[in-house]
Structure formats: structure tokens, C-alpha cells
Length: 357
Image (cartoon, rainbow, N blue to C red; front, side, top):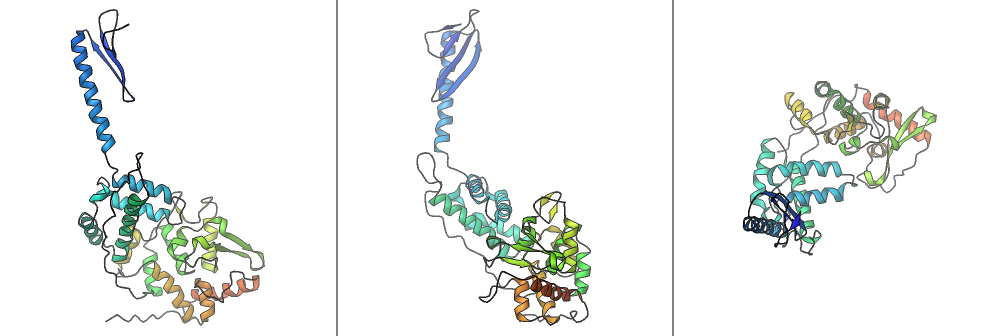
């Protein structure tokens, strides 16, 4: 093989030519066959021009929203809310993942909002997705840079309008509604909602409950779970008291997963407000009942069973200056007895719902 008069064009002994040239850090390599030197030079010129156009396009291409979102997900992977953020991002990417960040505003967001509302999502849920959009755009403008130091979004992101939210009153459920609703749910979700209505935990804590948080209390013959401050809304440790129902659930979940208490198909459950929950609550005429209303149900049943305000606050994890995060085994035993009162249907049956005017 010999080098011809044009660098980058080689010729074999049999007269065939080929291109083998490095241009702007990219190697061009192409077999040309038996053609003249002039034809080979023309093809090389075309290949160089094609490569220049491609490299210039890449050099001036701006990151898309999906690139910004992927970077944000990477930065959020150690957050307690990482799975929730990922869920919102996946929803958003279906609508404008291939848009450049500067093209995202109220107008381009409206089809996403309309679709979510048609699917039954409330204003609060939609606003949480919009908050994720706003965070990603702010980071693209203020923190994310390309190799030349240019921001991924070269201007301050536009103000993203939020939907008006109307604060809904708590909607605790009756025993009859609980029986009807829970038995319709998939087995893994049944256990989770039953655990919720008997502990008053928020859904994020039920989904994220870890075996490493379990603390045996030998004097009472069972364990408690101590949720660390970084995983609890009040930013302090919370001791989860297990009554007879929840203790039975915990025992049934052992050895299913090494890290998480509640899983589905060997993976942690990231949200309880899923399609099955929404479908079945609607089927029995309770479209207004949220997962968080199970916490209200627990609180209502505690009050109906005569549990004092202080003990209710302890069981629910309400923030209080006088509350301690350390309990003696005698306190644990007493709280278990109180938590068991919500299992007694007599005296905790009637719930009066007053509609807002």
C-alpha cells in the first residue's frame, strides 16, 4: 500500500484506493475500489465537508430538556425523594423531553397539564411535577455548563404558573369502607394500606421503610421501627409503634427483601397512590379518599378510643417541643396497648362527614 500525492488517500498494489485520514480529531476511513486519483480526491472532499457540517452542528447544538433532567436525576439519586422525582421526570419526558429548555413555558406545559387532569390528577399532584420542571430549568440556567462555559439555558427561566389548590378537608374512612376497599387491592398494596391505617405513617415512610431501622424491644416481645430524622417530615427521629395487626404484617414480610419491608416483584414500591388504588376507590364511590386519609383515619380512631392528645401526637409523630425521641420499654408497651385500641371496632365505628360549603 502506497501513499498517493494527496495525504489521506492510499492505493493498494492492485490499483484500488481507500481513504484513511484524521480530520478534526475524527478518523475518516472508506474503501473506494478502482477509481482514479481525481475521483478519490473528490470523494475525500465530500467526506471532509460532511464531517465538518456534523461537527459544527454538534458544537452549536444545545442540550435538550431530557439532558437537563438526566443530570438532575443523577444529582438527586441520594435524596430521600429520589424515586418520586424520577416518577415525575418520566411523566414530563413523554411530553417535552426533546424540547430545548428555552422552549418550555406555560404554553408548552399546557398539554401535559390537560392530560394529567383528564387522568384524574389533582392540582397538588400536577404542581409537584411543575415544581420539578422549575427546578431543572433553574439548574440549567445557573449551574449546568458546557465545555466552553456556556450555561445550558442562557436566560433566566420563565415563571411557570401553578394551578390553584383548594385545601381538602380530611376524609377518614369507616370500617365498612375499609373492608370494601382493601379487599379489592393487590396483595402487596393491601398490606401497605393496612400498615398505614394502623400506624398513621405517611406514604413515603411506608414505601421507604427499611429493615435497618428495626429495633427489638425484648421486654414487650416485638420490635419498633425508628425512622431517622432525614427520612421524617418533622426532621427528627420517629418511633413507629406496631400494634397486633402491623406486627403480623412485619412478620409476614421478613426475608422477602434484604433492605425494604414493602416490595413488589422484588423491587421497592415507590408510591401507594397508584392505578390500582385510584381505580378501586372510585369503584366503591370514594374518589375523594387519598392515601393520606388513612393517617387521618388512624388519628380519628385513636381519638374515638379515648387516647389522649399527647399520646396521639406521639403515635402520629407530630412535632412537639416536649416530645422525646427516647422511650423506655414500659412506654413502648403502653403505646402498643393504645395502638391496639384502633383494632376494636366497637366505639370507633361512626364517622360524621360534613361537606364544605
